[in-house]
Length: 327
Image 1 (cartoon, rainbow, N blue to C red):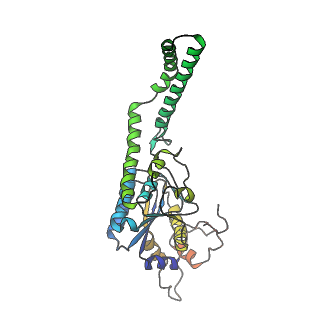
Image 2 (tube, one colour):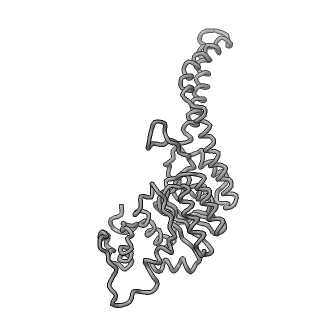
Image 3 (cartoon, rainbow, N blue to C red):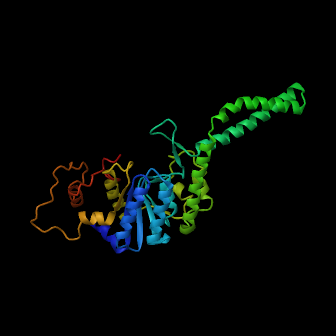
């Protein structure tokens, strides 16, 4: 781990971890780190999120671009990075997408009516409207042709009969659509489109037509956009380097030690691990840091110096990719 920290320091790359929902409190925490830090030339944001507030996502991307410049801002995705997280990625010059990393569509989520924990896609009602409109038109054409061709009635009379049949069939379904709710969802999708346009104008990160695809072309919020799919949308998508892989493994351990799905966790990774893995070795003869109360590691490498230092700092031990016990 010491080698990894030295590499980032020597190349002038500041590394941050944002794990949790995209919201204003997370943006405020990141701004506090950026304002007090003596910054390097570039930054790499390790981003782990299920989504959140697009306003906060836009502010996070703009803040990092402001402090480092759009061309010096990269995002690393070691796990899931959905919705508002994808919006942040649009503001980055390039992406580092890990084997288990995944993006998601720019799909705004709404609380389901009469439900506490369930959410629905902002596209659901719009897709429902499109489906009903197409079905109503096709049904009218079928009724018109059948009545006109089979009964010998005039086209005018047949169309009136077909209209009444279609209205009777589809009116109850259209009546269930709340026009105010429809307007809210359309406005929310427009927000994602406007923010995406503003971010990609600076970063030049998206390919032509990619923003519209991210908003409209994927069927569900959880749709997996892996590295191969992301390369169809983004201009610059890379696999992780050895140093990025090493830092990501430790960053995931830090993230897993907190219920990050409920509350954002924002950390300056280099400063955090510098305290755990100092450059100077401990003085000979000094007692080892106490690990009382910390569960013993379950991986074969638990006895290494890095693992011992991490345990003494309270960093959770997890199986990592390439080691036995990974699930």
